[in-house]
Image (cartoon, rainbow, N blue to C red):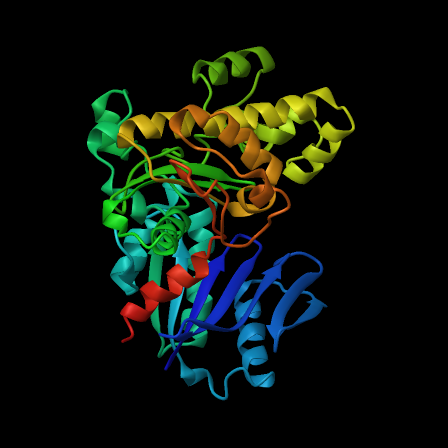
Length: 396
């Protein structure tokens, strides 16, 4: 039995799960929030009970120190040497990393060279890695890339119709994200349907504050809605998704915006928040829609339309469809949004059994009628488990 820790470091947060492998037993899980702010929050599960500690957490190094102390103090492990592997979520692998890798100095240098492609996420991942590396020097560290699952896309799918020199000089192309999540739910769907993933055509919908849709053919990603950055694709909490590129320069001229200000509007002030004027959280938008807020109602319709459009497009590219999978915060918990989306793609043979769908949240469940042509599934994602599985391969 081997203990593996999965780590997902954000700019001011750090999520973790400790697994016993290969049984895949979760020994503990938790999160650090508000790192670097006045009062940090450290939540950890001990014997099924949540412990919450509130105190200043100045940086990720302090967070990792607190975590490792807690593992010993709460007797989750006797000695830190029991942790043989650490899997780190790495958002952008560019064209360099198409599979998970064991981390060494060369890997770190190459990963740092990709910071331009993910300026918010990659540096945060490195900070988390370095803090764990210092605290657990004898542990095998692995980078698991969000982009890796999508590295099987063909050039006619991932290239943009821009001058080719920009691809050669700056690697401007579609990369796609949420790959670890899309892979997990696609393979889990095949398992639940007692089918071989290599015989299936699946469309996975990871819908949360960030969202993306992926076409999975014979276990491989052949297209995905996010692009060069996580800004492209469907409508999201604060991100606009796909728009006419000319809108950017039009608004820059009209509003006298710098490139940074324009990017900030598209990334942080658009999407559900921008259209509804209410919130970036789907639950708040739904509550406002119930009260008759017209822009909130419109927001829900736009969201469903964008997702349905991708499902229709990918149905054509796949040449058929066996299953649609919903995951992510909205996908797992919003039965009405699932219905809005599926109602728009019934022409493809997809349908929901309202009795199965209504009120179903966060559990693995087939939501389509028993005789449905296309199966519709709700499968909660488990990126941490996928990260642990990949990390375990380097420890065995």
